[in-house]
Amino acid sequence: MMAYELASLLRTLRHGRALAGKQDIAEAAAILKPANPDAIRLGDDCAAIPDGNGYLLLASEGFQDSFVRSMPWFAGYCGVMVNVSDIAAMGGRPVAVVDALWSDTSETAASILTGLHDGARTYDVPVVGGHTNMRSTHNSLSVAILGRARHLLTSFDARPGEVLIAAIDLRGRWHDPHPFWDASSALCGTDGAARLRGDLELLPCIAEDGLSRAAKDISMAGLLGTALMLAECSGVGMTITLDDIPRPDAAPMERWLSAFPSYGYLLTARPEDADAVIARFHGRGIAASAIGQCNETRRVDVTWTDEKETFWDLARTPLMGFAP
Image (cartoon, rainbow, N blue to C red; front, side, top):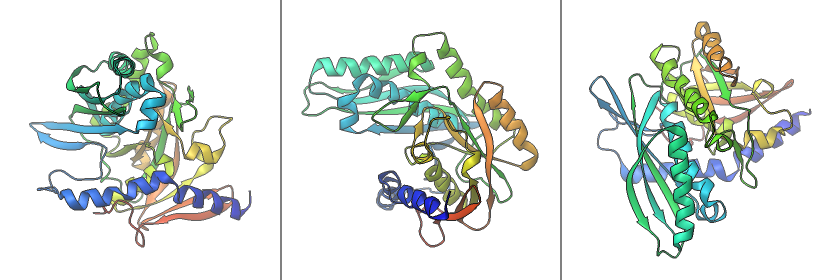
């Protein structure tokens, strides 16, 4: 592997649509301007609202019309799946979801709603209401979720010197033509659904046992883009070794770094706690490894074999603009 191959790989990821979409967040945040940014911090996987001895977690996901049109059942299923992943990434457990649906026919709506119902049953989280329009000119879906956490995992609490850990369920398949690594939907309606719920339970248990304070679920920005968001919010830099990232044997590196896994998380941990965090995932058959370390540079640097390149310098170019 030559240096220009790593540089080319990072250039492709850096200029992809996924990271461009994350940069757009800054424009929305500038308009909305939360009334109390110290209490509810923007840039996390969920809004964490102080509530008694814990936190209410609130999040939502929207899905592109083309995706909903081409895969209506899977879009509905993802409405639950990706939201419960956000709740888990914050150290929480889901309480309920609501949906907003627009469809051009009742048949399309039925397929979307069936997927939503199947996802809710798989992850044992009820659909408690929403908005439905079956006489629209297009097909769109958004789903919001409420959860609760006792102890938070956040995007703001990674610290220099901590180990960066990636945990990804490799027991899946590509959901072509989209960049989804799906280790979930095949277990819908089977005894494997209980395993999916148990796998999610790892995250709040890790938070409650004090093994980690910072995490994000790997989003459409891919693994490096997600690491970049975590680094920006925490005001740290990171070094990441590509060869240490859990990856299916047949997955090319560029495709894998662009993937959105159904179960994939980045966490940071103190060096003395890293092995314990990794062991918890291994105990449930989930691939996990230390892939890098946090530092004070505010750069995300990447190594592959014996080459090293800077993926992004946050001191020069903010991503979402949520630096501390």
